[in-house]
Amino acid sequence: MLPRLVSLAILAAALGCQRPEVEAFRRQPVPILVRLEIPPDTPGGEQVRQEYAAALRARLATRSTVVVEGARAPEDAAELQVNIRSIRSGDRPASAAAVGVATGIAVGTLSALAGNRHATFDGFWWGLWAGSHAAAERRHSEYSLGYRPNRVNAVVTLRRPALARQGRDEVLADFDVDGREVIQAMRPLGAAEREDEFRIREEEARAFARVVVEELERRFEWTPRSQPSFYGLPEREPDPRPAEAPAVPRKDGPP
Image 1 (cartoon, helix red, strand yellow):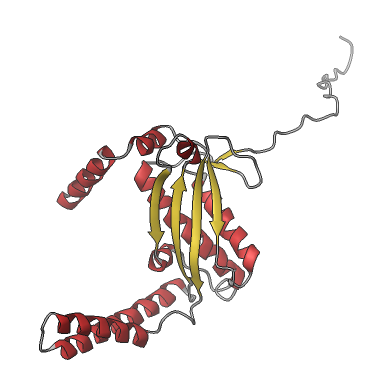
Image 2: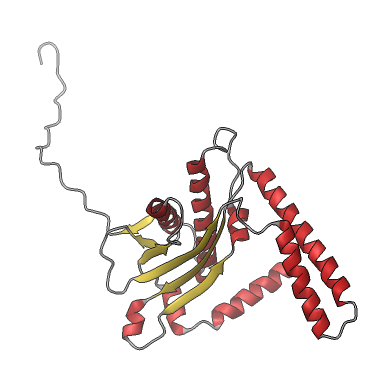
């Protein structure tokens, strides 16, 4: 109970120290335009980008109003700029051995600079621990999910360009998304889906969207909407056919 109260107190203090622009957006949010970029060498290219962007719009619309793809955003709209730095497949991330070696060298070097006579020993044991931890984490992820997940790393920035035109700071939020967070947000797939690369990628995109929206939800105190909210949906054209007159019940026999 006490840790939860401490967390709420820290959150309340952080919200109380927000800039006026951030507080104004929190109280009266405007439609958000999603812009998402991926590395140019990503296999699947534009199709992958569209899938991640669509998942993000769909998730974000359950918390705020989102500008639909291709629609013209209002002048005061905010922009969610997502720069995915890497989408690394399961056979390309650094191995447990590489993690251990890198950690060991870093710890050993710092320990030596601090004058520790056992710097080499410290580096060896810390490297061994880091490598074992990385291997265990990977085995746990693959076992619990039923498939080998990708690691998606990104930088997310929420801007409001209208503020920049007024000479004010346009950045409302800025944070990183770590690949481990995305993996933790992924959900297991059934046996029939575990070999379907398109179904796996769909779940990865949804997990990425969950992480991004959860962070925005925490910062701006958003709550789930009963229905998704979109800006710029085409208006439904009226039916050109004349309305049919209501049927008059038929009476049998004399009145």
